[in-house]
Image 1 (tube, helix red, strand yellow):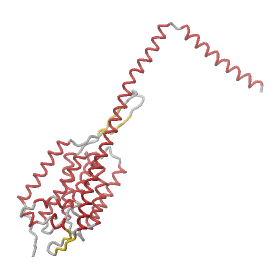
Image 2 (image 1 turned 135 degrees about the vertical axis):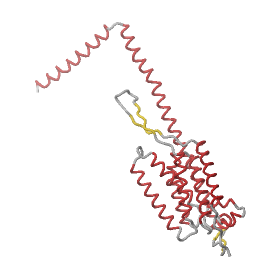
Image 3 (image 1 turned 45 degrees about the horizontal axis):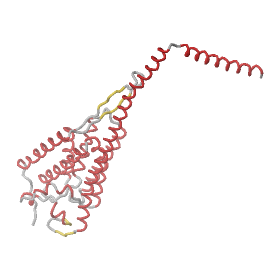
Image 4 (image 1 turned 180 degrees about the vertical axis):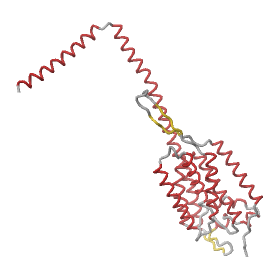
Amino acid sequence: MGVKVSSNTENHLKSLDTYLDKLHNDANQPLWQKKESIGRRNRQKADNGPRLVEDYLGKLKVLIQLIYAIAYGFCCRGALASMNIAVFLFEIATPVKNSNFELFSLPLVYGAKINNLILSGEWWRLITPMFLHSGIFHIALGSWVLFTFGVEVSKVYGSFTFLLIYILGGISGNLISFLHTPYPTVGGTGPVFAVIGAWLIYQVQNKDVIAKNSSQRMFLKAIIATSLSSLLTNFTPIDEWTHFAAAVTGIAYGFVTCPTLEVKGASPEGDREKRITLVGRYADPCKSLVYFSFFILLLSSLVFIIEPPLDLIE
């Protein structure tokens, strides 16, 4: 016991001796050396300060942009979903039995794709069907796909390009249905298949840097949506060509406007630490608008090349 106590005492005395020697050396150090050492530390702090502030502001700016994009994208998707739901409620509230068209509401009678009426000058019927639905299951499918894939597409393409994808998909689906089938149809789920097409091309373009697990889950949802839509076409006035044309248009338009992810390596503390970051950018709105106009002109030219079949109304 005595040996243990003396050993601890000896260690404490050595530590105290070392500390006192250090204080003595610091006291004997010339004043100019002290000032130089303090100045060097202050300069290091002064150099690190702006860099830390700049890094913080950069991260804050990215965070604000992300929050704004998500909020704006949610509002855009919410507005589209609300419009579809409002029209559907109006369909339910205004039932009309029409044996000629086999349609059962005022919005469907006055807004569905009916070839004869389109050829007689009611051109808006190439646009309005994208907001019309043929039942609760049809609008449920469209809303589910819109919020499932719309979140991803608006987040990577930007809300403006996402809106153009949606509108272009609806118009292209209705136009191809107009050129393909003589029967009255609605195309409320057409635009969402354009959104799926744009999502697919984004996955292909950035397959090397996107997590595979998330992509596989979304791809499974795309298969489920396609299967359900094919099932619905057997019971409701929906043309499968609408979905197919919208998806192809979404892929083509998504290809020319697709943003890419860039891998950047940053070393904020020299070679001691290396960070890999994925930097994404939205599709250029001006470029998206130019390509949107080009696609509209290209699709419109099909009307002069292909003769649409007429409705057989007795």
